[in-house]
Length: 118
Length: 109
Image (cartoon, rainbow over all chains, first blue to last red; front, side, top):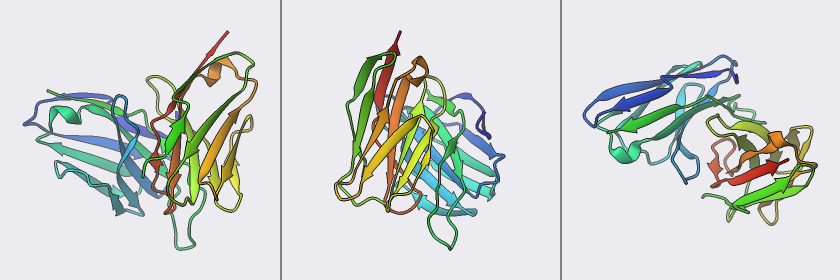
């Protein structure tokens, strides 16, 4: 257990459905991340939140919509997805970057949500 | 910019050593190394920062050549538990990482 939980662990949805992925961290971290991991592709960074503010959006299509209500919770809202969006979606957290600058920022990953879009 | 990892795959016998390389075309602030076992989340191994600081696993070492924008992960006296896919993640901005495609490592008895 890394202190980062994700629900659901598996999700099958149709292209017209709306669903949400949830991530929760119990580590007192201030930065949270969404990654997409597809077969034979590297981990792709999707979004970064630092102290609840979105600081990175890696050219992600608008059918993916993140939400970070507080430093412990991160959501990824999904709507009108495509079959090529099927992948493992990983959430991670780290200490975050304060005004003092960059620090050690090892990321702790959750177990992921295996998403299948039919 | 995605870093390039080499080799793509390695097979070792228990006790042997291995080196995994990671290179970037851009100036780097930090390099992170993670290991992912099949069906599990990636697990942090090591961070190397520009300027020489590092933090990580006791039994795994790594180097960071800032001028060449390269990092190498050294796995010595490999154990069966070392099997998995190793990813390097690079950052030039502080904490947002770009990951390589991974190096698959299999340690056999």
